Image 1 (cartoon, helix red, strand yellow):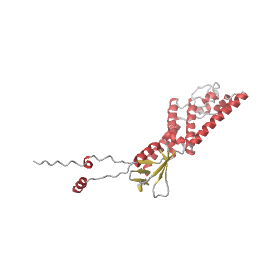
Image 2: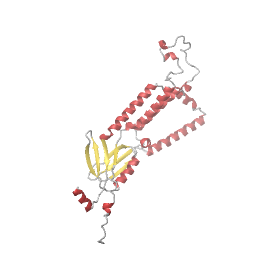
Image 3: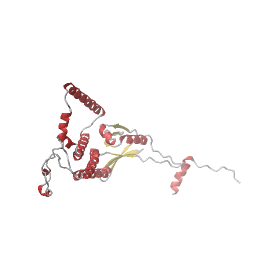
Image 4: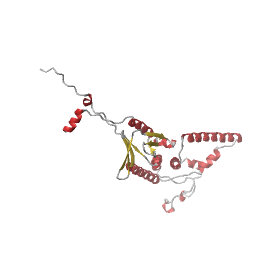
Length: 285
């Protein structure tokens, strides 16, 4: 009976193959995606106008100005007179006007976010400047004993913005259609970072460019605080060795999570060591 010890399997052959890093995909999005708050507000306004049954008439004016005479009910009396019991300030507080003002205000805010970049110090300066201006105006009004509510009420009295539910629904559907196209076409131009290489997919036929990841450096930038607040958007700058021009990836969503994923990918170089036994099995198969 042989007493020779049985050969133990090598650690490389016994150990299971570790999970290979699949890398991350980085998409660049157009700035129109920052209109998603306007789409949500349009949906809210559509629901609100549906609830109040599309009441778009100015309550301070005669109803005959908004409705054709042939559509008026027979025997209607007093319908051509304005409702003098409602002031213009009270008109501002009507549901149809509040919904219209909310929609226009959100649209203006979104367009401002898309049009200008607001760095951190610019936002801080604007907030401090606005607070100082408000304090200065209140201080002057207190000295002159001037009622500030009077001009504010006058401004509110001139605002009357209304639209029916169909308008809000059309805006919502139009924006959602644009978002769907953007989501479907994001594969036409994106970057894929793997432990061993960087792949740039672009074009309708998925043209491919390959770059090495050895000694890769990247920078994270947040050029606009408001865009970062809406969707965590920022900019990635890839400094690839032997490439003169840095690769600038604008409008990368949730950039902080992308930065952490890039650090994990770049912290390892995927090298697999095979044993003689695995090589023999591969040849035999």
